[in-house]
Image (cartoon, rainbow, N blue to C red):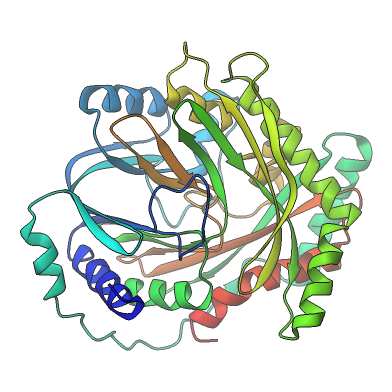
Length: 417
């Protein structure tokens, strides 16, 4: 298939999948990655579903996998943190995504090297997709986005968190704020396609659970398993890109040498190493890349890669539980950071800063981090997205606010503002 034919077929497949109550699409947007198995994968329709709230959710998923040992696509919400620590989530939740949701797809189509391959389902489906008429996007009024706090309130929160850092309660915390719209009418798939075109990222995805949608332009991998190896790739460190190639190269270079960003990144690397140690064969945890700089349409990011060999005594679901939620979205020490997140944030995170992805029949998996993502509850017409940044001793509250606005820019642009 030519590039044009491929993108048309992908669009048709996505719109076809969207006719089902449940579907999930994962798109690498042609980023090459040593651990990615597929360029693009679509799971549509559900033959079995596992939906759980807090309490034994990881154990239920392990039993579900062991019973079926087939392809599964699913979601871990941030609040699963409450399963294995003395933590709680008492903020208002307007989205109400399940704490854990997995489904076994009726149809599964994957693209590798420009060719679609049907993994599950009737082979006639590929022809059905080729003939599928993509509907015209519905036109809705602009979405009225509001911030959950103004700049002054945000700066005050950062000041309070600095006091905790000065006292030694934490070294680093990822503090997030919500932007939301009530009475929001959107065409979720059309918005996802616009977001994905404006901000193509390696862990983008579209997840529909009946009337709930996650439209994700995530640049970050949470955790991946290949053979017996676990890989985590936290992002900490962001710089805005320039349209001038020379200036852009200088910005990239400056990010790679930025002591503050390196300090933020290395704290999270240490945290992830510690999390992986709980699941690793003795002595196998290693940092494969420290402070790698990767470029995306809006930003340059600092990404590190940590890996280990999975302890043969431990089920791989246990390894997910041991590392969840991801260090890049919590802080260090992790438990203290999560307690302060609950104290100082105003909204329940829910699916945001959780993860979605797949598990394969042979027990391999790949999961993203749900950031740069729109969450939409269609029946309540409630739309929201959250953005955050790492707050450390050296963080400047004004700079952090600007970084949040930069991260929000692609979404705000997509929603027509």
